[in-house]
Structure formats: C-alpha cells, structure tokens
Amino acid sequence: MEAKNDDRELRISRLFDAPVELVWEVFTTPEHIKNWWGPNGFTNTIHKMDVRPGGEWDFIMHGPDGTDYKNRSIYKDVVTNERIVFDHVSGPQFTATIVFTPKDGSTLIDWHMLFESKEQFEQVVKTFKADEGLKQNLEKLRVYLNGDAAEKKDAPIVIERTYNAPIATVWEAISNRDRMAEWYFDLAAFRPEVGFEFSFTGGNEGREFLHLCKVTKVVPGKLLAYMWRYDGYSGSSEVTFELFEEGDSTRVKLTHTGIHTFPVIPHNDLAKENFVAGWTHILGTSLKDFLEK
Image (cartoon, rainbow, N blue to C red):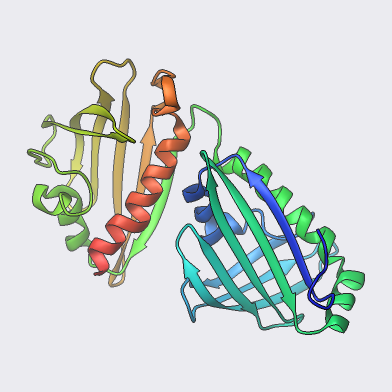
C-alpha cells in the first residue's frame, strides 16, 4: 500500500479465491456486508443500502470499546460485478473506488480511497490508522468468503432477493413455462405439479449437461421445489423457491441442498462455487431484470 497524489490517497489490491459474482454479492447486500465490514473488533448495523448511482448507504459501525461511528455514503457509479464508486459524505470525507476483476475463478479487488486533502489524509491515517484498518477489512472479507459465505461443503446454498413485483407475478415467472423461458431456462415443458418430470440442457464454455428434474413440492403462490440431478452422473439435489409477500414487493428465498453429493469432475463444473455464482446471477440479474423491466 502506498500514498500518492499529493499524499492523500490509499490503494490496496487483494486476490480472493471466490468467483466475482459471489464477491459482488457480499459487497452489495446488507445481510452479508454487516458480517465482515470494518477493522477487527467492529460490528455493523445497516439502516439503508441502495446500491445504485445516487443511492444511499447509511450504517453504524460499533467499535470494540462501545463507541458508535455513523457512516453515510452516496453511490456515484455502480457496474454489476465490475465497479463501485461512492462518496463517504460523513466525516472523514473521501471517495472510494472498488474494482472487481475476474481471474480464472478468483477475483482481484483494487481498492482506492481519495481524501479531500493531504491534512485530512494524514489525520485519518495517524488517528484512525486507516491504512491498517483497510488491510484488516479485506482480511475479514477473505475469512468470510472462505467461511461464512462458502460454508461447509455439505451446507445448502441460500440466496434471497426482493423484487418490485406482486407475488402473483413472481409466481407466474417461476412456474409458467413461457415466462421461465424469458429469464431462466428454455424448457420443453413445465407444470407446477408434484411428480411432473422435466429436463433441459445447460453448461459452461461449450460443456453441456442434461439436467433431469422432478417437481417434489408445490404450494401455489408460496412454494415450488424440484429434484435436480444430471444424466450420467451420480448425486441428487433439490431446489426450493419460497415466496413471501412484503407490501407491493415479493421476497424470494432460494435454497439448493444436496450439491455435495455431486462428483468432482474435470473443470469443476459441479462444484459448489459454480452453483453459488450461477444462482446469484439468475436471481440477482436475470429474474430481477425480467420482473422489473
């Protein structure tokens, strides 16, 4: 780490053993970032986190000595899985630029903090030890990605998203074959009926897999689950969509269990981190764009 630009900036780079979609996820959702943000010993209460240009991020960092530090930032630039720029408008004031670069399944983070003046920079470094705090912050992120976010091998994947759409519309999106083709997979047929079997082909970088699925649970407007396995490979898993009405919006909770039963194969296509990245994109981008377009 070094200071440049008239000694008023901090820079640091770290490589994380996690796909960029997962790293972006833990940077942009309150339920994740509250668990790792800040130097050692700090905890967080997130009041608002609207990750879009002009959106606000309001939270309180609770120091190990009981002191509360109010923080307010305004996002200036947000490019999903690529870049976040925000102005920290509460003291001390600075502009943070965080760039995410995929590297063969890992993610390189370049973090830049530009302070208003040399004097402010020196005060923050000397008084609050900002340089050391930033190092600790990224180390906590590394531990979180390798522990809480990745979890144990046999733990389920759980991803939640809230959409600006009524629950009936979301249910239609996840249970109607024609709607599913617009954001999910182009299935030959699908019916939300227990026992209904369906299949589709999908994969990565030209490597195709035949998915064999069977509907296992249906509560119209509330829950849909199906068994998920692969033709020619051992193992079986289950995907569950749960819908919760929240005013005019709908919260979707996806749970994928049993991934640890799949074999290790070349290119690690059936590895848990690939499922995490895939579901994060499907729920966080594909379904969101379809419902809120």
